[in-house]
Amino acid sequence: MDVIENASDQHLSQPKSLPQAFPIKASDHSGIILLSIALGGTFGLGSAYIIPNKAPMPYSPMLIAHIFAGTLGLLSGTAAMSFRKGSPRHVLAGKIFVASMLTMALLAVYLAIVRHQPNNIGGGILTFYLVGTGWLTARRRDGETSRFDWVVLLIPLALGILTWMNGLKVVRSGASSQDGVPVGMSFFMGSVMLLAASGDIRMLVRGGIFGAKRIARHLWRMCFGLFIAAGSFFLGPSNRPLRLLSAVGLGQHLPPAPPALFSTTLYLILSVLPLIMLIFWLVRVRFTNAYQGSTQLASASPDLTR
Image 1 (cartoon, rainbow, N blue to C red):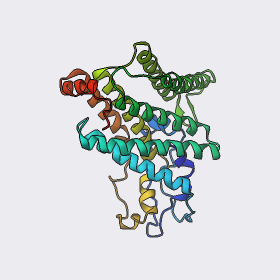
Image 2: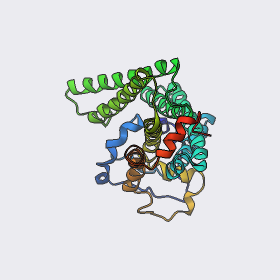
Image 3: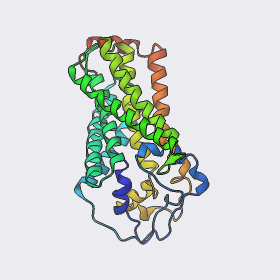
């Protein structure tokens, strides 16, 4: 989550072997701000660069765990999307992804609370909800629900309403953005939250979810949780990936001015990749026969994650 923006960016510093900053041009910034809502925070045109000669600061154990879990979540989530759904490799990568993402989200909420960052609290809770309910969907039988689902749906419902109310407040004030985040993106994220809540209600009213629809529910929630994590990491301020490499001692092995490897365009592509893969897999599951056998197996199997 974007708790890294206010925490790890204070700790990740550039080593002396990299004396020059690697700026991201202001002209490259037009697309990056459109996804900044996923971060729960803001950054300006001049923030996407490494601050040279900044004295290193000690890491807190919680922050180290948060960064490690987030990095592991990105890697395992990418692997899970690449493997055939239901295969042993997909299942293994999925288990690692769920454990790391839930850990990252919990730590993000904790760090946001102690650092008084209310926006990051909501982002961490939303990520935990999406990944957690996506995991439960895969573990259950067709049509299986519980009272717990009625309680959990209050999370996206409350977050969605609050996000929409905040967006309307911004519009009524005559502003087009809040803290650098376009108001349209507030409405987009609020709509996604309300969509998740409506999906929970529809599932409970109909007595559960079945077949391909159950797989689709699992896919979109997992992929959107991965999208939030990717956006927080790649689109955060101060060229976060490069600063992380520098902090672990790999920055000194990089060329003086890597052009494409740390460009805004590449970061933008990596951030939206989970959404592209989400669309691909949803179409493949819902509108082709590729997973017809898998959905039949899902009806008989109590746990798709085994």
